[in-house]
Image 1 (tube, rainbow, N blue to C red):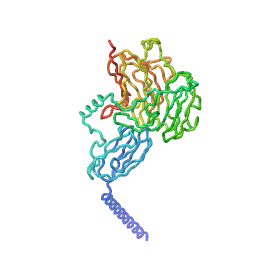
Image 2 (cartoon, helix red, strand yellow):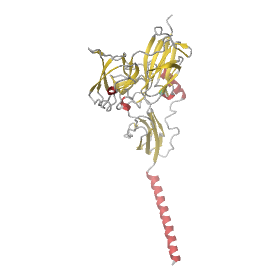
Image 3 (cartoon, rainbow, N blue to C red):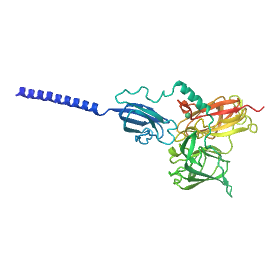
Image 4 (spheres, protein in one colour):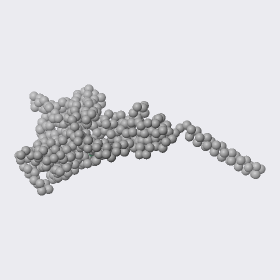
Length: 446
Ligand SMILES: [Cu+2]
């Protein structure tokens, strides 16, 4: 009996193994005949599309990952294939059927393609090995790259429509109050020549109009919201009563679409501040709703000697140009200085020997080390607070929300470049762009 039982078990096991083997063989055959599927990992960021960008024809599965800080997506031009809009660290899997050809992949969010989110997806004939180096690089020859860099630099300064930081006019009311008007709206803005984006603006410009007050001014600011989202305005770095701080719903009701809201306070302290929306700031501020707000006189270190350099006394120190330098790196505006990307940035033109004051503001998402060739910059105020011990630096790292005020003397004629020293914020394979400007010093009149 035991012998028979053992024989039955052995025969059953052998039969089972044969059946499993047959099923596996059948499976292999069917897979090989029906579907050739390739998985590609593609990474989105500010502002590039990188990763595996080559596959044989057939089913191509795109694992689209947003490694940037702001929202992005991926679309294949000329097809219906498009990922979801992905928040930072978001992933979407897009299954496509593509025939051989070269497809443009891009981000459909306004301004992102123009800022660099464009690449090529190469689909080869089925069965061919993917082309080597299929990451969209090496498309330009070294000579072409040299030429593109020179051409982009010689285009500076390029004309574009619109200029930010214009001084905001006000009306003086019978009781002496200075009344300003701001309108928040989505309006076109030319970031660099031909690159027109749907910016979120105050009074149609990026950066918003500069507000200047004297200490002690009574101020009234009417804010009309023509965007579709509710908003508010925070006076960053300016002392106000709590109910004027602009943080809805804590300190006020949100300003709904189509509504007008009035802020009213006394500018009691000097300040080098900025103003921007607080609600939905990751949309509105990054897309352009920010501006400079200055109260009172500059706290310059008159007569002080710093690192062996004596700053002239008040009355002897004439400031030829005082300007805001507002940094941004995200939204539809992208990597920019005062709302413009090189070569549309504006040079600071100074006569030899003249003095200039610059207030750096960072309204973006990452720090930018701002470097000026040749002239040491005397950092005399941080966030509008005068420094007891001002210091010279040639590179000033400005983090989001910070302000640094600097004084420098333009001592030598020539074009001196002035830029963010994070090199990918200023150069691409196809030339210079983004956070670059220059101080142009003209020889002193004989
Ligand atoms: Cu930078």
